[in-house]
Image 1 (cartoon, rainbow, N blue to C red):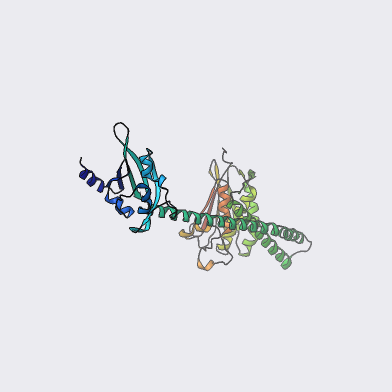
Image 2: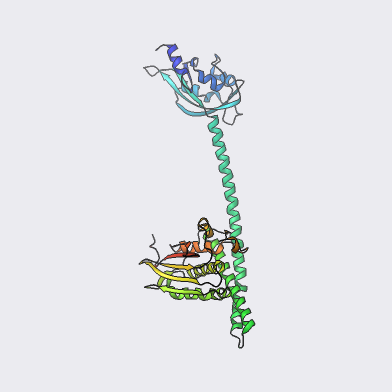
Length: 382
């Protein structure tokens, strides 16, 4: 193959290709090379080519040392790969970043008779890399900021829980004392019942807040012990019964269990069921019964159902109502300014922490049916 044919072949290559003799004089300099670096070949000695082509280190300001030129190293017998250089001259005034690889050319005896260098433009690749690095830095900064905000929020929640538990406990204790006072009846008894109901509800919300914050840090812990589910559901019904009575509702309990004992955290399950009952009391139809039912799902799990006869939950909201701080209502008529979704979000966390799940569906002929599946025993570890 003659030189003209070789030159034509090299001109068809997209990368820059230059070939020199043993003294560094250019034998071939393809079109892509001239286009990429903005200038064609020169007769200047190798040591002066840095100024001719405008060769700099990747920092774009430091002249590239002549002894480190890829061509010079190849003529010295060294192979190089992906050496990054910045080129700026009148042909490429904005500059171009290139990646250069060089190899010595040898004759059959192994003597160096020249060099070949191949390079390509990596300016756009470098721009994208730097953009990604900038984005990664920004993401890291935002993540650190989010972690700080999360830590502050958790600290605030813990302080709030700590500061509220004592006065709430005092209200509950004194309320119980007043209820046992001889002759307490009528409006006075009703007022004390209202105080107790509000205090218990507040205590449950405070504990839900604590558990939600702990879960956000992966510290939601379940203390499993054998519990009589029938007794626990009766306690949950009693805790919500007064509020239900205020809306002329009854909570009807039905136990259909072959074995009422499950291994679970009694406090978490009790609050979980109370939150579901509380939601149905809030949104169910006044004067209509609330259903609370426990049944066998299979030999390894039980199902708890809480049902109301209200407007139900629209299909597009059935997952959203369990989101943290979600403010979604079953319908416009039942819109409540104090509904923030913390209680139902806690329900999801508590159910999943037990290896179970909770969801809502239609209650035929109308209303909402919350279904809670819980395993009878703790899942195996390891």
